[in-house]
Amino acid sequence: MKIGELAARTHTPVETIRYYEREGLLPEPARTLGNYRVYGEAHAERLLLVRNCRALDMTLDEIRRLLQLCVDPVGNCGEINTLLDEHIGHVAARIAELKALQKTLKDLRQLCGRQDGQGDCGILQGLASAPGSVRRESGHKHGRLGPTHG
Image (cartoon, rainbow, N blue to C red; front, side, top):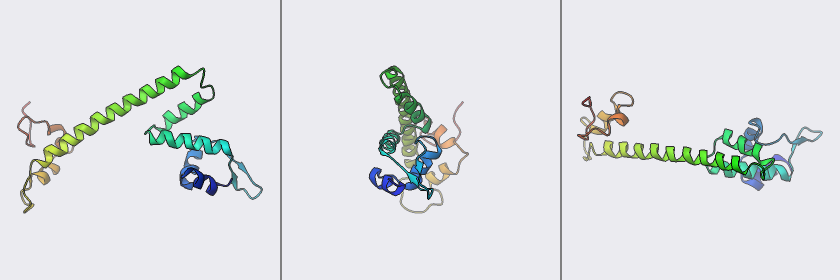
């Protein structure tokens, strides 16, 4: 099948397929005399695996490792489990970061409950402060942005 057919069959944009080829996640397809790519069933299966991994937010490096382990899945179950456990750890860390971000945004939102002028808006003042200070100081015990008490 040509790249357009593979794209339609797997619901994957053509540029994404080409990107995965460049990244080594898909094997090089055969070429016709006219230099068109020709894909087989193995390409479609591999592409679906890659897309499913991406849907699970796996990095390209994690997917590469997994694909290497797919060559001998019976002998590598422990390594596959380890890879997935590591990814679960990354997801947990990301969730913690997102929860901290959510708290920071909520704290920032509490600085201004009015709907009128922006001249002395606590949110804008907080956002205009030194880089990183909003997140760093959002846990300030007084709930205000500004210098912390060392």
